[in-house]
Image (cartoon, rainbow, N blue to C red):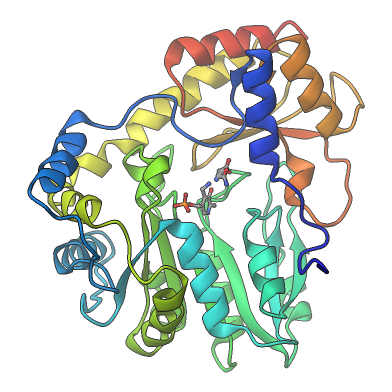
Length: 378
Ligand code: PMP
Ligand code: GLN
């Protein structure tokens, strides 16, 4: 069989988590919480399982959850989405990203991708015959050069992929970024997929500027979210897409044949759980404490860093420590000092030697302290 994704192997997340498990290392590589979700949420799922909510959910998601998501968007961002026609529940953000990209891209279409980029975007573009066009963001600030974006837009550009707060850099979009993007696409046939799975994890009193908050952008954007990050349930694989009616209609045609519908009892449980906004409003404080704890430990080390603005990832530079390639260093640190990380070069298509590692700080405090202590020995 001739591979449709010849350059793709096993993802780095799987590789590093496996190596961490084999060596008994502290696993700060793959991004997932090292603690459990709320027992209240588990009880809710149990209740719906026992009540017999065990058959197919409606294709678009159970009405109560779509209504709760529309309400949340309105409460937070003052944007009204119609739960019947503009909100769709998916099997994780990964499915939503794939469906949105598939809804837009035809063979030969160009897609602007900011790199470093989360690993599922480019394969989804390529499987649809699209052509990724890269705009490179460089450490330590990872600012977007909007002039470069403008120069890379052609008549073939159909889609721009946005991710804020950003994995792996932790960077968060500003009002200026939103305005620059709006100015660029205003008179063109360009759509946006905005990956906002870390929308509730922002630090130092920043607010999340969802692309839906800009009227020009809102009309053309598929906003993608995930409950995995917000409620510490990455294993439940449940996410969603908010998009204007015409976009949602096309999105749903794809979703219908990718998965048809998403796990039923969990949808009912999440609808109840979302009714209390405190369940996500405490997230910035919760994760900022962890970020600060980890960075306080790392300040004793020879790593250098700019504190993440959002997400549960911190990238650090090791230029003061070694000039090994980042992949080799990540493997060596896992084996020798027992701390697993992700080499940031894997998020770039263009080869580079920025010498950065990514650590996930969604872990118990004692684990973060121990990891920082081990890293400070270098
Ligand atoms: N986008 C980004 C930026 C992510 O970090 C992740 C989770 N690793 C996803 C999408 C996928 O989310 P889900 O697990 O809900 O499919
Ligand atoms: N999003 C997670 C990360 O960036 C990994 C998800 C996965 O393993 N596919 O680490």
